Length: 256
Ligand code: NAP
Image (cartoon, rainbow, N blue to C red; front, side, top):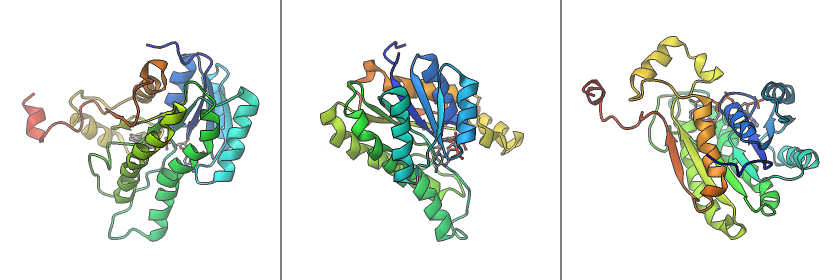
């Protein structure tokens, strides 16, 4: 699709596993210089080594501004700059509303929503210097569009990321930086695999394309937003869910 990522420096938070790892792989294959950040530096380094192609893995905790500043500084020391931030790190522990503790709410908010703010804010000085500054946020269909029991806190953060994006993109437009979001449906990751074959099968049955998504499906959507060709697209979302949010009922699927 694009050769405009060749040599660009891309940071992927939460890139040691799952969707972030898929994003890192797709960008590396597109010729970008990729840095993976995660709390566990050993796992980030292992994922980077497995992808190869010069990808590096570093420690970086999105709940800590100091940790992000240190991580980004190390990226710049080793790769020269930062052109693209994929603010992807997120957690999704389940807790029913009636039993949810303040600590559970705060943990999810701190990582998913405040973590997005901190990741973006710390990257601005670098992105301002790029002629292709890009921010791509990993949101979800859960929250902005759909709901799922156990995820009131998670859904609120995923919807909150989009509210954050819609003002951030206006503030950063003067630097030529775009801010967009990918909204994945059910994507096969290590975490989702752990929810069991039955869960996966029932999810696949409710999706018009009859399969769960792959991490590469999300990586390619992020790659589009990061491309030179998407330079006039900002504050937008793309749902990547195999059509999951569209059927009005099970009957609508059965009749297809
Ligand atoms: P995952 O497989 O559990 O991976 C999460 C990644 O985030 C890991 O690399 C983890 O590494 C990192 N991480 C967690 N807390 C962090 C922190 N405080 N600072 C830095 N890194 C942190 O998750 P995933 O399923 O790929 O989800 C990734 C994103 O996609 C999330 O934002 C999630 O909301 C979104 N999403 C996922 C799905 C899906 O079906 N999987 C669907 C919609 C949206 P460490 O533990 O080492 O930090």
